[in-house]
Image 1 (cartoon, rainbow, N blue to C red):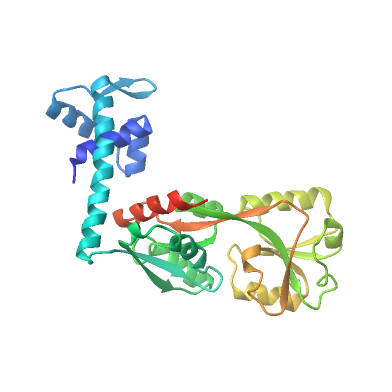
Image 2: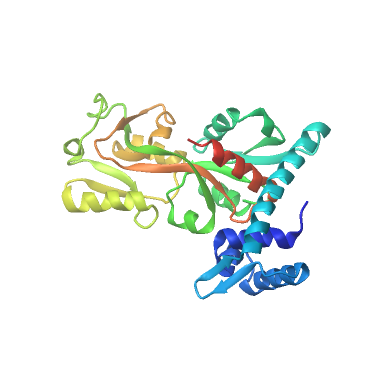
Length: 296
């Protein structure tokens, strides 16, 4: 609802350089510079001062920037009001959910958001936690599905996808209810001495790599069993069948009926949040923008 060149201008001002704005818009710096040059020529004023360290707003540019921000905010409000009045054309958010990656944490946050954002409609899309199904779901992010909720301390995911953090989950230890340690309220490093601990292989998670480093340096009597980089139901079955221990986020405390999950004396936590495509739809960008305002 406003000139696209002005939107680009605002993003350049926010980013402080043509190259950063280009990266945010998935285009080349030359394309960004051409759009700014065309806007300045059309208006007949210089909006940005080019420097070796980026760009700075001229007095005329500062005036346009402040007015444009107000216009853009008013435009977003106008679209929301029109959708509410029409009662149609809601922005549909396709939210993936599975046994180990349930959508409830996101829905709990969204339920508390003011009714003025009722122009979004959430559609639940189930998927399977098997490696093949999860891989296919990740490939469809931004196409057939908008997002899912999961532990998200993964080197590859951080590079490949965008993440909106919801919370930090305590790293705990899962073990069979028949295990000698099952009756404890809390585990210590001494409890783990001489035990086998299932842990995601090195090079997948920065948090778990630090845990491995601590075990290698100070707890050589703990035997590590490498797990795949993706948790699925079979991993929990193996933990119970082998009678060993397994690192697990606290949110998965009740996923297996034969396992108990106990807190550990360490301070490791796992980021937990919304995973989505780096270049999502305009509707989803608006959804995430609203969501971030309400996350505590």
